Length: 243
Image (cartoon, rainbow, N blue to C red; front, side, top):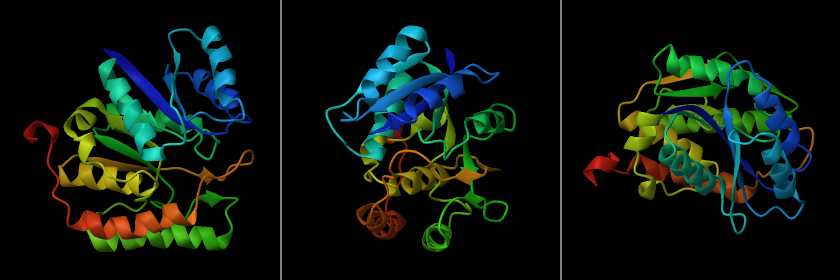
């Protein structure tokens, strides 16, 4: 059984790919890294391919045919991790908005404190966001409030994308019933874990907006999240074993 895998989806991340990979590998705990690469035209894949020669057995890449959505990238990574026996599986952005040092704290929340999923939370202790315009901060904060109001979840940062999952949680979720592909995917995964009775711990982090490369946020992604939350409220959640 392998221990920890960090899944990092990439699309046009040539400025960040090498730096984020080297930073993860510099940590005092050993993490493997899986890049899920969506056919970036900027050459991200070739950068990762060269690094794979330097880090054999620790750095992996799955190349897909195009930009297929954040949710499908992570589900692809989850299945890859489960097939290879990892005990702890992490979601992390490539652009340093998530500080790789916090991987250690998320791991501790699951491995020591008993969480089934640990969330790197921007809002569990005030508002910890750097370099965002105030309008985006307010939109994100009240989006989480809206999700809590509609779903009943007691999670402060419902849209967070920096997480650690225990293997047993991912084995229980029926990925075929996860329908959203944008940021609503992050809400749907938390809601599913919550409805199935898994223990969720929020770990306070400082979120820093990217300084290099382009954000993937769009109006369509935000709209999916708003409408998707209402659909989630009426969704029947079943573990994979009962399907």
